[in-house]
Length: 271
Ligand code: UDP
Image (cartoon, rainbow, N blue to C red):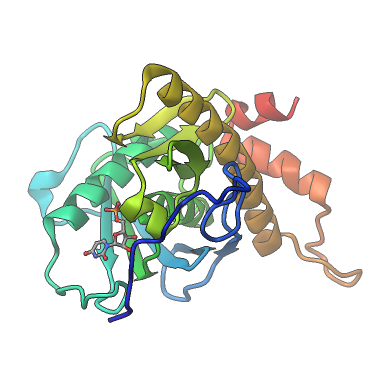
């Protein structure tokens, strides 16, 4: 177990955070699409030291059948932490926290998906936290949304997510583990960027009304930046470069295709 002690301060006299970031600065983010061979769609995310892989299967036949929905597909999300992902060995049995986060993630992704196109089917989203260093539910949403796009599930938008919090009285985006543990509050959120609809909003800790409104604005800005990274990751996976490649597609062509696939929401945003 790694020794962990409360830092003397979360915001330095210079206004920087424990890892040297500015309050509105995200951790380094690396998104990859198509990382699993067996899944219909997959993606990974490294956000700081948080590392997560998401795999999507389906749409496919739903078992057990009593979960079937006649008007749409069932979005079944399973969020799990590896036993070695946290400082204390995580017990392998699914915890209440994992079940709750699975549900929260499904609810955050659902509004962006055209599940009604696949009545009675299931779309399975398996999320594995390899290393947890704060912000796992939001990082999981970022990866799962990309994995769903990679699986070709019709959607009106990708869904980016980020946690905004309060450390030493200062609003900060993309909480690291120490800020999560020792800070005064945590507001994880997810949005549909083009419309700024909020598909996830939770709050731990105390925020004044003004602070909460500002936190939401900071979260929206960060989510829009993460959305650009998500689109870049999709481009990287699908745009083949090189003069001899028949499937060559330049970035503009790809953007047009992506907009068609994702529907009007993204077209509006790019105008
Ligand atoms: N955590 C842990 N053991 C657990 C669950 C969580 O050590 O069984 C730690 C882990 O570092 C995680 C952090 O607590 O990133 C914050 O968890 P929280 O429930 O706030 O969710 P998150 O911020 O990851 O979405």
